[in-house]
Image 1 (cartoon, rainbow, N blue to C red):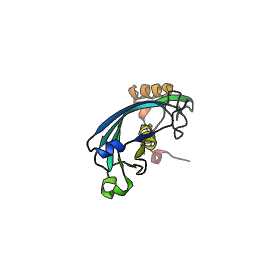
Image 2 (cartoon, rainbow, N blue to C red):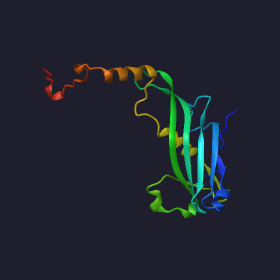
Image 3 (spheres, rainbow, N blue to C red):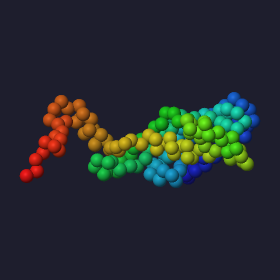
Image 4 (cartoon, one colour):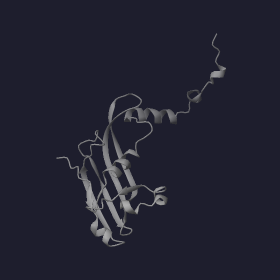
Length: 166
């Protein structure tokens, strides 16, 4: 069964500045990442109360596997994603201070229920680890072999100004 619950009750943390909490999660699913494999998302959450209006949340060792398409050969492959550390601040909306939001990632705390929803933060942590060029194992091995070769002609580039079109 898919576990889509990303809400965490934080009222006790907001009432005691400096209080910490730790949560381990496994098999979390989100519709924002439709290509997750059957293991879905796992990792650890560390929460720390900064004040009665704000929390610091750290995602540690977030792991998942996404079915992706290789940019080189267009084959499907499973891409392992690991984010060792991602941190953001959660604040009550009325506490929002524009100076802090310029340098930190900030998410809202629901003032009525005193819950936070970490789904967007978790998705960002995974998306940030997406490579610029996605390569399956076969294409990755080819690119490493090319980089390690000593063939000088392989890296030769001819400028278009040197080409004559008659």
